[in-house]
Amino acid sequence: MASLRPILLVEDNPADVELTLAALRKTQLANEIIVARDGVEALEYIFSEGQYADREPGAPAVVLLDLKLPKVDGLEVLEKVKSHPKHRATPIVMLTSSREESDVVRSYHYGVNSFVVKPVDFKAFFEAIRDLGIFWAVLNEPVPGDF
Image (cartoon, rainbow, N blue to C red; front, side, top):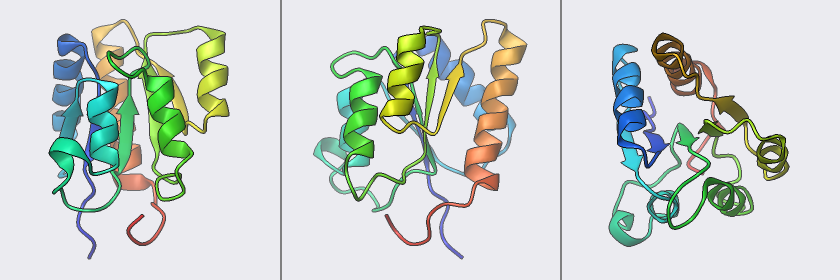
């Protein structure tokens, strides 16, 4: 049986990180959750560079990606990952507070798998994260092999 792929959470807001981690823990997923707090760190993880050069190979089960990030924004992270042949199949969910039509359009243009607006209500946010975690880490069937 293949080992569980980690979930990569890319979020710079400490409160959103804690809420997201709490919601994912509540689902009792066995996947490791890696937190990247800016776009550079996310790219280093995905491409196994910098501090992540020695990590186990393989793509995350899903990348939960914020749009507004320091250093490199979420759209640029998305574009770089989806334009790379080895990482094109990595599932990426844009998880953001932005409702800007241009952000949605550009995200899908660059190949995002899903665009989810963070609910403002605590309970709705919690449920949205729980559902995302279960779908992408348990129900979704990834591309076979180590991509």
